[in-house]
Length: 31
Image 1: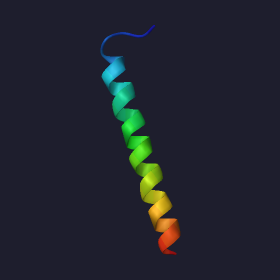
Image 2 (image 1 turned 90 degrees about the vertical axis):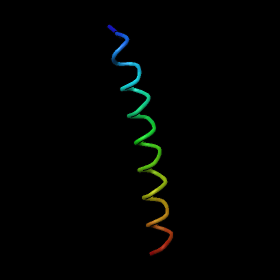
Image 3 (image 1 turned 135 degrees about the vertical axis):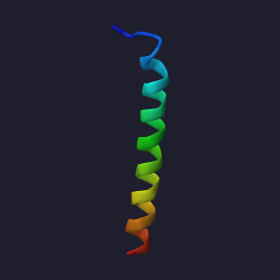
Image 4 (image 1 turned 180 degrees about the vertical axis):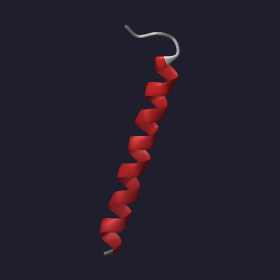
């Protein structure tokens, strides 16, 4: 099921989610 193309995509998605979570946490603290 996992091909070599989906692995970098998965890592990128994880990094995006991590940054989004940090961004939201900062916005909530600012409010």
